[in-house]
Structures are given as structure tokens and as C-alpha cells.
Amino acid sequence: MMEKLSMGAYGGYVWSCYAIALLVVVVNEWRARRRQRVEYRDAEVLVKAIEEKR
Amino acid sequence: MWTFFHKLASPPHFYRLARALTPWFSVPGYLLIAYGTFAGLFLAPPDYQQGDAYRIIYVHVPAAYLSMMAYMVMAIAGGIGLVWRMKLAHAVAASAAPIGASFTFLALLTGSVWGRPMWGTWWEWGDPRLMSELILLFLYFGYMALRSAIDDTAKADKASAVLAVVGAVNVPVIHYSVEWWSSLHQGPTLVREGGPAMDTAMLYPLLAMILGFTLVFASLLLRRVRAEVLHRERRTRWVREMVLSPDGKL
Amino acid sequence: MSAPEYTGPGLLAGLAGMIHRDLLLVWKRPGDALNPLFFFAMVCTLFPLATGPSVEQLAFAGPGVLWVAALLATLLSLNNLFLGDFDDGSLEQLLLSPQPLAILALGKSVAHWLTSGLPLVILSPLLAMAYRMPVDTIGVLMVTLALGTISLSLLGSVGAALTVGLHRGTALLSLLALPLAMPVLIFGARTVSLAAAGDVYSMGVFALGAYAVATVSLAPFATAAALRISNE
Image (spheres, rainbow over the protein chains, first blue to last red):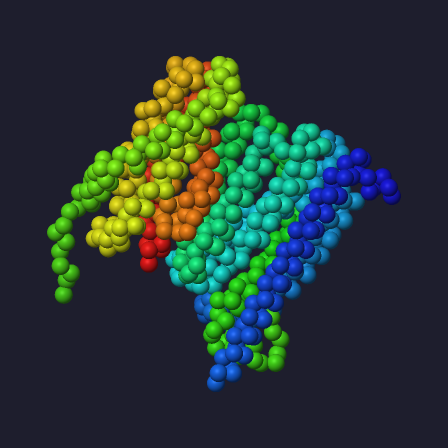
């Protein structure tokens, strides 16, 4: 098992690459969803304000 | 059939379609990535030259491939926006940029880490792929910098579209020139030019990763385009109706 | 009812007129052209100051240093390509001209090269000798610099058109133009290095020539589009 994980002395390099890749994907998802939430909230605020004026 | 494309150009239709489609891209995409990761790390046999270090290929190649594809999406969408004056196309271009830049960064990082055990250095000026990726990163930065420097959205759209098209035309030139440059230096290359001569046990995880990452990219793009469209169209009636109605939002 | 016939200057006359006007402007303000030239010379002086006057080092690094300096000097001069016209309103007049904007853009780039690229080419032998580069490479240096600066002038005009009038446009122009300029730098500098080493270098020259032809024929259209976008 350990030898599978250690990847013949290259373990550090290989696992860190996969970790960075995971990080990049996670950050992309997080930022995209955050942008969605922010824009939706802004749109809500704007629409409520317009509705109030009526 | 033509009406389908016409409707696609309308923001509210696209928004609804994108919202419906997103999980159809992201779920298969992540499943493929999960399989590819597992198979690439544990099922594929070690390389006779590079041992287990070659397994970095399973993240490096998809990242590099996507970095190029995202740029093409950006340039083509920008071109469509310029020629046919489609606001939606510009929204797609703007959304593709940060995703593409992050994958370019990933390609550079994984390429550098791969290089360390292979060549002994963290950065090898002689590798044509690394150099091309670096220049591509600069192209992305220029694009995003230009967009943020122009306040008016329509102007920013058009200006960055021109930049993206000019950059896209130059990408093959850049590749060719960097390859010529590194061939003079006889520098080592990262990916063995063997290509499809790879053992199938090594190839399938790679294909799965490439396809999986592409689907995930598409889902990320759809998400960002939705946010972008929401921002640009926030004063329109369809957005107002969508926000006020109690059904599914976002 | 047919449109009135155009009786003004033709395409070639328009091109020549644009070039003539810009050359005249530079003639009145030589500083615009001389500053980048001095910059070129000074950057070439920085390198030996920084790394010491060892002759082998200088001769070896010469092509690269001269080329990078030429690139930076061209970038500097590109900032002013449309700035003067933008500031005094003549850019808008150019946009309204019956001449095709691409022709006018080409004219401006030609005038720009004549006042920035060509002087660099003329000055380069002096600096090449200062760098103890072999005398028979000076010809290759001048040819590559000539072709390369043509490409840079044209490619850079697109960037200049996109960033004219923008806040912090200068830094932005560098960010936009430099990645596009890298192939030119690669071919230019390495070709001269190959010539210095006695290797075959013709491919680099052909590549530069092809790139120059491509930019001359295509860039003016992109520049024209960019000018319209920046000034609407």
C-alpha cells in the first residue's frame, strides 16, 4: 500500500500535482458559484428597489 | 432548427437552457475525472523511462489542452460577438478568460513540478510547451487587463474581442517560433512525442481525463455565463420576472 | 438616385498624404523620434555596465541585448502613435475621412517605422561593433532588425489603437504587445546568434520576412477596427 502511495520516490511530485489540480478545480467551482450568488443578490436588490418605487 | 439557434442568442432562453444543461456536463465530467485519476494513479503501469513520475501527465495534458481550448473559445466567441453583434457571445468570451487562465497556470505548475525530478530544475527554458504556456498566460493577463481598463461594457467587449482574435492568430506563430527556438538548444521535452503509441492501459485514463476536464470546463463556463448574463441584463423585464417568481432561481 | 461620385484623392494619394503628414509632425518635433533612439542606445549601455566588459560575454550576448533593447524602444515609441492625434482631436477627423481607415492606419505605421524602426537599424552597426560582434554578422543584424521592427510597428499599432486614451494605457500597451512580440524577438535574436556561430540562418530571415509581410497586409485592418472601437 505504502509503495503505491510513494510512487517510487516520486510520490511528493505526483501527489502535489494532483492536489494542485484539485485545488484549481475547487477554486474555479467556488468562484463561479460565488459570482452567481453575488449577481443574483444584486439583481434581487435592484428589482426590489424598482418594485418599491412603483 | 434555425429557430433553435436564434432562440439561443436570446439571453433569457440561453439562461434557462444553461441552467438545465449544467449538471449534464458537470456530473459526467467529474465521474470521468474520478475514473481517470484512479486509473491513472493506480491501474496504469509505470513508464519504463520515467517510472511513476509520468503520472503527472494525467493532469498536465488536460490542463494544457484546456488552456488552449479556452483561448479558442474566447477568441471565437469574441469574433462572433464582433461580426454578428451578439451580446451573449461577448459574455461567453468574458467568462472563458478566468477559467482558461487558471488552467494555464495549472499546466505551468504541473509542468514545472514534473520537470524537477526529470531534469533537476524547477524551470527549463528549453521546453517549448512550458514556454508556449507561459506566453499564453501573458496573453490571458493582457486580455483580462484590457477588459478591466475599459469602463463601458460594450466597448470593453469589442476591444477585448479584437485583442483575442489577434492573439489567437498569433498562437500558432508563437508555438512554431518557440519550438524552433528550443530545437536549437536541444532542450528536453516533457511529453514524449510517442502520442497514441502509448499502451492502452496508459491511454484510456488520459482520454478520460481530457474528456472529463472538458466537460467540467463546459459546466464552469455555463455557470459563469449565467452569472455574466444576469449582471448585464439585471435591468431587463425577464430578470425582474425571474427574480420575483418563486420558482428555481440562480 | 445614385451617390455623388467621389472626386477626392485616391487610395495611394491618401496613403502618401498620411505618411507625409506624420513625417512632417515628427520633423517639427524630433524629440518624438530621438527619445526612443537614445533609449535604445542607453539600454545597450546598461548591460555591459551591469555584467562587466568581458569581450566574449558581450559578443555572445550582443544579438539578444540589442534585440531586447530594440523591442523596448519600439514599445516606447508606440505609445505616441495615436496619442498626439487623440489629444488634439485629429483622430476623430481621421475616423471621418472618406479614405479607408485601414489605409490611414497603414500610413501611420509606415511613418512610425520610418521614424523609429529605421533609425534603430541605422544605429545598430555602431552598437554591434561596440559589442564586439563579428563584422560579417552586422548585415544579418540589420536585416533582421529591419524586418522585425516592421512587424513590431504594425502589430504594436493594434495594441496602441486599443489602449489610446485609456488610464495607464502605457503599461497596458506593454502587457498587450510583448507576448505578441516574442516570436519576432525569438527569430530576430537567434538568427543573428546563428550567423555569429557560423550556422545556417536563412530560415530565421525567411520567417521574419513572412511575418513582416503578414503583419503589413493584415494588421492595418485590426488597427482600423480597434480605432473605431476606442473612439466611438
